[in-house]
Image 1 (cartoon, rainbow over the protein chains, first blue to last red):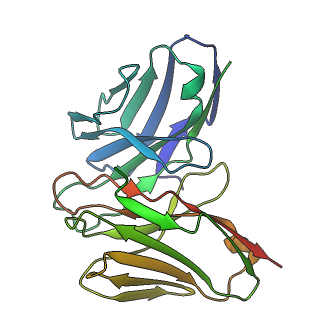
Image 2: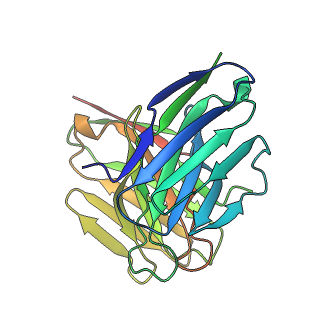
Length: 115
Length: 113
């Protein structure tokens, strides 16, 4: 059974039209991450939540925002998608600091296409 | 600044051969070194991981070798199979504080029948 679920799997949006990607988890882990992965590249961290504490990477564009209304759900909002934002967006979770198990579990990803 | 360097970028191995992928890290605060396997259109999945207190970890056909003094670690896939064809990412993180994974650039492995 999937432990990190991302919806939708594929998203097509128009240039400049706001889009929201969602992630949910059944593991009840403290930390949720959003990564951006462009074709043939490594995943790049955008931001993460430790519980409700939001941590933004210094080079994450302001165009990207995130919300975590509860432990299970996290959303990635792209306010004005550009062609360069086309990528696979990966959500991941782990137990957080002090936990014995440091494994990060990834979702299947949402492939975003901007037209 | 790239903190985890991975090589080679791509690798072709014959079925039954040994696949070797190497990584080097810079941040001495890293103390957790996982390898992830990613198939096209899928999210990365943890393959095997090691901590610096051991120099080698083996799980089935997959072995991580770790050299703390050289700040290097490698993945060995024994008896490589066509089903192993995927992209492999090494990563590193800290167990405390900021634990987000820093990924290497990835190695695209192709195992030929």
